[in-house]
Image (cartoon, rainbow, N blue to C red; front, side, top):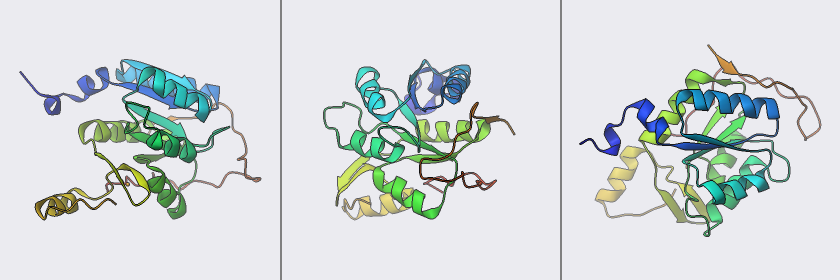
Length: 203
C-alpha cells in the first residue's frame, strides 16, 4: 500500500478540491474548467471575499485561488481573516494569490497576510500546474507568533537546522485569460506585468 507522499500528480488532484475567488465571471469559469480538466474532485466559486469565507466554512477546500483585486474584501484581507478565524477547521489551507502585477511590496504584504504562493495573470497553465503540485506535495505547517499567522516561511534547510537546535522561531505557452478587462480600483490603468512569472515563496 502506498502512502500520501507516493501519490502521482493526477491522484493528488483527484483527492483535492479548490475554491476560486474571482470577480470576473468569465475568468472564474475559465479557471473552473481548467481545474476540473486537471482532475480536481470539485471546484467551488465566489465573486467576493466575504462570500469566499462562507464557502470555506461550507466546503473546506484543499486549496484556494484568490484574486488580489476583489470587491468587499480584497485578496490580502481575505487571507488575513481566513488565517485568524479559529472557527474554521481548515484555516491553514494553502492560498494562491493571483495578481496582474507583482512587485517586492506586494510579495512582502502577501507573505505577511499568510499567502502561500503568488501567480501572475494571465495565468500560465504550466506555471499553475507546477505551483499546485508543489503546494499539494510539500505542505508547510501553519505557524503563529509575532503577530503572524500563516504557512512556515523558512526554507527547508533553515527549518531543519532550527529543529535540530530545538528552536521554534516563527518567520511565508497557454494562459487562462480574462474575458473582460477592467481598470484597477486604485484609479488608473493596469501596470504592464513582467513576462517573468511571480517567484515562488520557496525559491
